[in-house]
Image (cartoon, one colour):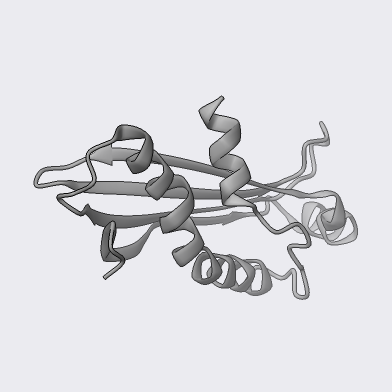
Length: 140
């Protein structure tokens, strides 16, 4: 167990890949390099110092094109915070940084498999997510 928290469970709550038709598929296949990965992390307090952490990845085209695919995964982690952790800032850092650093490699692999199985093999996520930077941005 990490000295500040323990991951009790992880699971995929929702996973989605939507491509409307063959024209959209062909268009997206040519333009998937323009897609961006976005991440959103939310949490909900449960009982007995447990927290449900939702990590949501979306891979989407920000352009206003009508021909676009949608890829999304909602990954849930149930964590238990150690009794000695009392500060809310420390708990927030655990949720945004520590848990994510531990689970993200697995989520990324699942997400890349989703893209591959959706007909878009070889997609790479070039920009790695810096969870410490994300936490510091949210903190300010």
